[in-house]
Image (cartoon, rainbow, N blue to C red):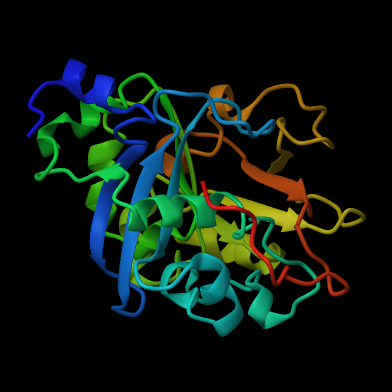
Length: 266
């Protein structure tokens, strides 16, 4: 077992491990087996909006994410999110599950991620992410796993972002200081604020912003003045700042379909 941070960082190379497992166990949403994985720890993310952030993926252990999306089993990690494609709403989730999530899931099934307590000392996790920017839930709702996992992993980070649709539910309560409440409409904003949350809302391009909202400065409509890794506005209620709103940049609308052939798994 790796017992020091220098050796762990050296091990996080393509030839050995490509990331670490943060959680393996039952979903707090429906009890089904899920896994949370952190990657892009020693290399920059290719996401132009987020910049260089540790990326985390929450997925079913037993079902490939693109299959779970089509069968509705993604509810284990996404809950009742209205942006799930199975709900057939006008606005769909922007995550291309047949790309990064599927690649991460495939690597997980091949044993490419280090397990705390087995491959390395679990006490090293906070130091592993120290001074990095950390994206809580690049795919999947952070509330699907215990909040203490996120608190431990992000204890020493420089910056973090996170969003949850479970803010009305008991399982989301522990995330108020870590994540933004995902609001689907202005009424959600009012409700979440009354419960002590800061909010992140996706609006239609022609819809007005609310008086308590600021446009995401990393978005195209916000002038792309910064990136998420340096912005720091989406850290939940731990900071005193306005709510955030962004124009819909979803992957699919009602005319677009999930590809039947997934991208190659790395």
